[in-house]
Image (cartoon, rainbow over all chains, first blue to last red; front, side, top):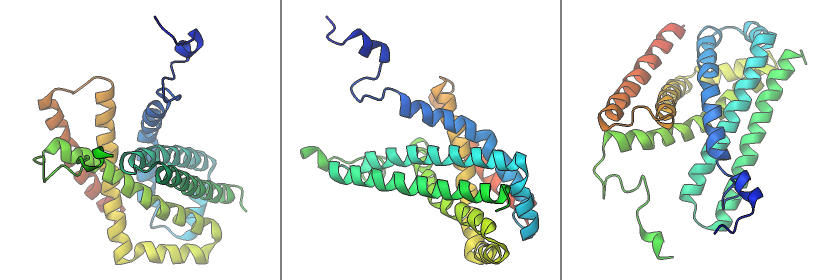
Length: 126
Length: 128
């Protein structure tokens, strides 16, 4: 006999109420980060030691701006998911765990927003 | 709770468990992940400096170009290549490939060697 409602079974979210979402998004972001990271590292090899004007011109090119924003969104999302697992593994006090998770998410998204804003500011010539 | 006293991974490696390539590479994936997260602060600093103007950017280049900055960036490059390579290894496992013990050791060695080689190649090409 199954006491779960048909809707609960279809949703497949289980007792944690979020199903495999965390696990799955961690994999999707990591897959996306393979080409994005390689592009970024290869680009940085030529750009990193260039002068200010060259760097800003490079960041501001539409193709690079778009890929940079995608890289930053994916990286910070992946980072938040990864650090969440680390905190959940080592912080056992429920209150402390919740506090640590909230602070971590706040810091990660704040830094992510700052990075994306910096790219857009350069792209739109602010 | 009584369960608090039980050793938790990775803290059982050493006193309770013999370190093995598999377990060491596993915890290294987590350590490099956390290190890369901290390193993101410097990526954001670099981008914000570039967006702020030539003076801020020159200052950032000075910080990142210092001995300590370069050492940090070198280690960050290795952490990135290790986490990237080992991440691909994890994705292969998730897809059901390479789970036999000999394959796990072989892919582990490949990832370690590749991460070191790619780090040096990157820095040789990017050298001033």
